[in-house]
Amino acid sequence: MQILRSDLCKAWVLSVSIFILFGALLCLAVADAIEVTDAEGKTVVITSSDRIVSLNGSTTEILFALGVGDNVVGCDASSTYPKGVKDKLPSIGYQYGLNVEGILSLNPTLIIGRDDVRPPQVVQQLRMAGVTVLLLKEPRAFEAAKQRLLTIGKAVGHEKKAEELAKALDTDIEKLEAKLASRKETSKQKALFLYLRGTQTTLVLGTDTAPGAMFDIVGAENAAGNIKGNKPMTAEAVIAAQPDVYVLFTTSLESVGGVDRLLKLPGLAHTPAGQNKRIVTLDGQYLSGFGPRSGRAALDLFRGIYETDGYFVATGDEEQP
Image (cartoon, rainbow, N blue to C red; front, side, top):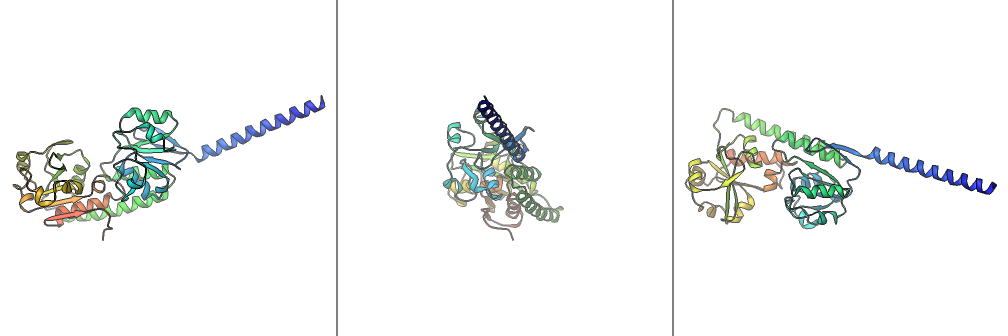
């Protein structure tokens, strides 16, 4: 009987010790958890950012700028910066055609992307599988860009670096504001954004697009007028718009064979932009990503529209003077 009581006592002590240890570990996990707010205003609790899957290019750029690129285990096809990143990392496809099995095969602990990723049921399946998913709105203004930067910085435990990047963005914004102030009394240039994939896909982008938002930021008039989203480019509409400058992604210009071939597209030569060969091209992620380099991109767009004659190109790789 004495031995039985002793064994029962030892078992009880062991059980209590395990319970206390489990409770302590649970408390530590909760203490280390990070809470951020997503695009829907909901609180997302993040317990690990050791293995991150990025669902879009601007998120990938931010993660590498924050210094957690080594934690990124997969990215989507729109991740073009840093250069070569999508060739080094496993691909999850495209952000508007997600596949749950491909993402889960990378064993992510955290997935970050924009709130309009598709299909939406994939996001539900990822959450049901126990993976933390943080979806954020894609910015169309600098303040929103800074907020997203700070949110992702907090999510991955690099708030200080995110604040440094936000301050650098503020510096670029101040430079742009000084340039805008110097042009306050002068007329705006009319800019038309052309989205091209060869000669088969020719679109103009309107006011509620990232390039359209950038036109507003740099003080250019959008020659697309009240167009929202995108519309097919027609010779009649381009001539009627009479833009002073054409703006394109670098890949769009390459897809039609350069400046001279661009101006052979119907209507493009019969405008002030075409007659003066006023063409501005910027890397797509650089211009439209609203990431850490967005202030520099705005400065480059301003230079191309207001301070340069003829053809201007910016890749986003070089630092600004």
